[in-house]
Length: 414
Image (cartoon, rainbow, N blue to C red; front, side):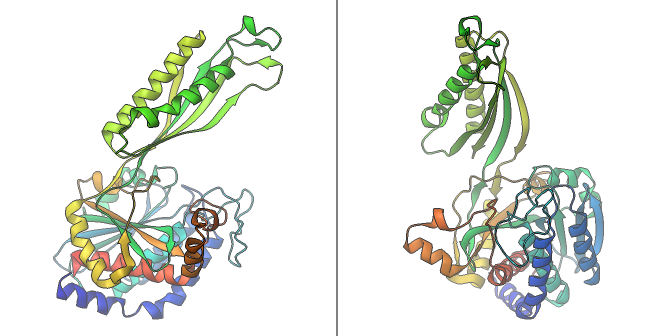
């Protein structure tokens, strides 16, 4: 981190304590009023209103409910900071006084996107207040529909880069179950690619008392599920990481009726294009072989339900960001292990050939975390993203996330 960057960060971040109460109010309001993917109208309106107050040129309805704000501070690099806005169809069980008020159907900010929005608003406000400390163009993008993997591409297809400058770097973050106050960063693959598949297996139905006249798709499905468990164990290099989960198996309606089909739902996670291709090919090979072995009367059907791209932190951009984080956060900057989760953040960069960096921000009360760590009960006692009990501790999470966004932008703009 250069001396000028360090001085700029100190000046810009001096106002964090004064803004924190307002940030916490925004966060609690967003948490109490979550919106599902593609329906983030209230959140988008709040964001757009705030950005206009601070002098941003605002573009709305990008890819549906997406919002972007642009602030220009003279000649210099162009930086895009991104936050996602959508919530999940989860019934909240935190017992918080600002718990979700949306219960029919239940919706909850169970992944921390409310914190992401608040932190990016905080960074936008801080940078807008000190234009004398940076030069270039700052774009802040508030993305819809991350949970469905469609929002980033929708913003691009909806004309994002017809309205805002193509960035020299795209930056993003995510709250994670780590001690609040920590920031986690790594170069290379960060989040896995993900593929969701629906596979229909065909049998020949009949009476449960006459199995000899049927081709039982329940037995076929059971054998297929068991055989698929060997893909990662026996066909993926142990040095690679892959996850194959059969999350659903649906067949039949009565105990004495052999159905004519079974449907499997698969989730695949991989960290390289080669491993992804190998796993997908193995799944198809095994399914077709088990159908042939069972005498299935029809070929199986494969349907893609969606995919998320691999998220890779650009090595040069990460090398530029890491000293800025180290200078500001000190020992609170820790290595980020590869995450088996997936998201579509990287589309905002790859669609225009820009480098990207994505990091983690701790959101768990430190005392709670360390108590669980001492008892060797982190997995049991610390609620993770998508849990109905997920509840970031607001103060330190928002302070750290806001600072991280601002420091990251200044690593290019200062």
